[in-house]
Length: 355
Image 1 (spheres, rainbow, N blue to C red):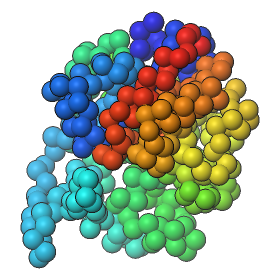
Image 2 (cartoon, rainbow, N blue to C red; image 1 turned 180 degrees about the vertical axis):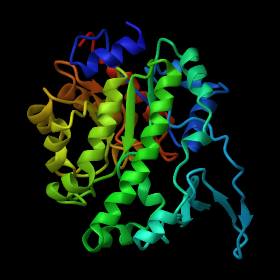
Image 3 (cartoon, rainbow, N blue to C red; image 1 turned 180 degrees about the horizontal axis):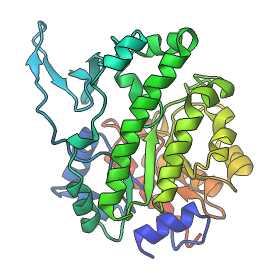
Image 4 (tube, rainbow, N blue to C red; image 1 turned 120 degrees about the vertical axis):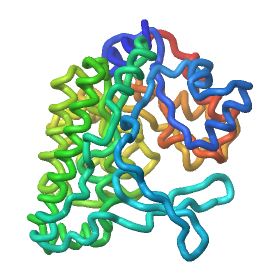
């Protein structure tokens, strides 16, 4: 099977020749892996580890140049193409992005909303790069996507204000979410068209859970996010792709809502209450494919390669019977994960034959 065939078959719960896999890393971990394998590119690392997906979250930005500057603390301030500004802070292992300016924050009234012109502009991206990306990876499963109905919105609008205004100004918040989603959907529509419908997965990032509970009640989730989630699902399906819902945290109470809307895959399956892999497979395995599940907070950074191997085998045994599992960690590989543990995770699938 090709990687594309393998990923598509497992999402449809059909037999595959081996466990399919995906992979994302922070920059520091990519550098660690390249050094370990003695290679120059991320592509070479993925080839060595037999990764089935290739990921292009967004097309390259080609819009007006975003101005950077140095603030009063001597830090360089960067402006993201989506409009938020950030500085980079060293955490002892790598640099993290700290957002310091949110472009939607001054939208307080309907008048502010009507006048605002800083929304994501789909015209500012290079869609020819999408075609070229697909051309380079014909036999791989192509995944696109980043902005979804919620999480990325909070990189443009203060989260505390957002939660308060869901109660105090619900109609304004819904209008803002809809306008933001309109632009994201248009961008993805153009990506699908440029790809010639060779995209396999649309993945949107929306962290609806904390490590102990949902951020919203299922009813509130339906009120504010269900309609736009359905729009993203329908867009993917219309172009022959699957819809993958990314959400960290304890999201079990809204999994039936996601199934009702046609979501095909959920990830990253953190090791939190309610997201135990055996229970997820038993209750939702016939309706969903799962991706992830190998804990990046505990065993991957802190365990031995043998412990990582054993935990990965446990997750695969729980989630892969009958298809419907894509091997991955529960988050991107961070820079504190030993290279040997990354290798152990992907070695573990070799214990399994055709599924």
